[in-house]
Image 1 (tube, protein in one colour):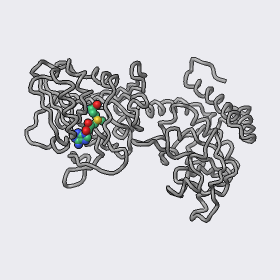
Image 2 (cartoon, helix red, strand yellow; image 1 turned 120 degrees about the horizontal axis):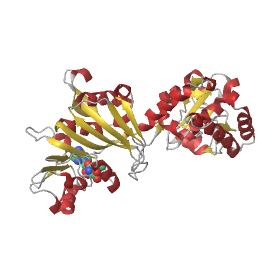
Image 3 (tube, protein in one colour; image 1 turned 135 degrees about the vertical axis):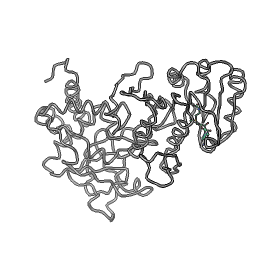
Image 4 (cartoon, protein in one colour; image 1 turned 180 degrees about the vertical axis):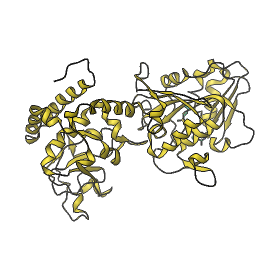
Length: 439
Ligand SMILES: C[S@@+](CC[C@H](N)C(=O)[O-])C[C@H]1O[C@@H](n2cnc3c(N)ncnc32)[C@H](O)[C@@H]1O
């Protein structure tokens, strides 16, 4: 497994949340010690106990070489698998655990953690979670009461539907103080959005602070716990929901869920064949999906999954997939690879208005977290896309821009239709800032 050492500025940002006078400190996946280093000045004294665990012998040697004399006497450098080590009897308890655990970028291996009855109905009292959640759970078990966990985690822990119960269990064990989204590509080779999480064991809380992706002067949301329990903990999603709440008060925008307007169909030609002979994400550019010599009308099993007149196509995977919605040019009847979604309007008479409203919605920079997911490569969540509210009223409210959009589409000019969309998006953005006039 490739090691993703924490960059200095991220480690420093996390260390600012560390308690002072730490008497016992654990890093269960220490790597080269980047997270431990800025915490050494927070130790109680030279007698503080420090435990560094890593399953990679080289990492342990690197800590010993790199931090050497700075570590308190008697620091424990342990070459072990943390998940096994953490089950040993009579382990000490820690008043601070700091970690950037390994994580699984693809669905696959799951690891058992102990759960209370409230969260587990199996007789064993065990539930299976991805590696990063298992590290988090075991680390919390090893915290002393009032102890603090400082963790760098991928988005699964913060937002995955499958870990909703896990977040509820965290709330039952203590307080999640901060969830701070890291700037994109803080870890250059990691696709997932990453977060700093600060957790205090055995204490209560009324609000949770969510911070956006600015490391130094982040925007903050203080969210009442009741609003967070049932949902996600990422700033992007929670602030997008708050914006939608505000916008929903403007009834002339005629909000409708996409599921009431269209169906979403996934292309069915799987790799490696799909990209070779069907419409694929590489066929998108400049607001349109283009024909290619590669496309073949050869018999495919599902005619329903071929492109039809009025369909909006969208990439299902990739960083900017939410910005790839557009109509096809000369590809009706073609099959699609499984990396492409077809958004098929319920009524063909609605197709242009839907395309316009959907593209306006997706051009707002804050809407991305509403539909994009993924611990590895990001992808569009089918369910979230169907749940996306669409401002169908923009066509009536902004007829000139609709007309410009249609002209842009007819002349296959991505720039023209993009300008019309942008113009409406600016007006919608202003609705969120009542200080500015709207027209
Ligand atoms: C993302 S790196 C983090 C390193 C360091 N803590 C940092 O933030 O720079 C994850 C580390 O976890 C270690 N690791 C992977 N699986 C482990 C396991 N089961 N038990 C302990 N360490 C593990 C890897 O060897 C690697 O050094």
